[in-house]
Image (tube, rainbow, N blue to C red; front, side, top):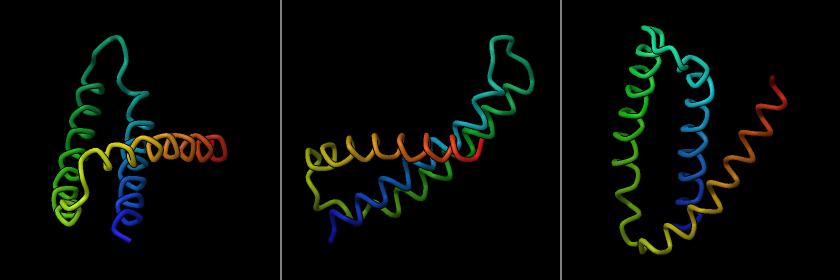
Length: 92
């Protein structure tokens, strides 16, 4: 059950990272302007919030070995990319 919970948390985490990156990515372009700076500040703010939540949530997964966490995270990242890609195709 601990591994399943870890998979779900990883999926939510990676999906949130990709969802935050998609709308803010179009504002960061080649001519660096104040809009780019604002988008970077907003994304850093969200990343700090997510990092704080991660530290609280992931403390219960200390009994899972690092090798297992890495092996579980790789397919979860791929699934998250596919999921966000499908959602992006549906709603764009």
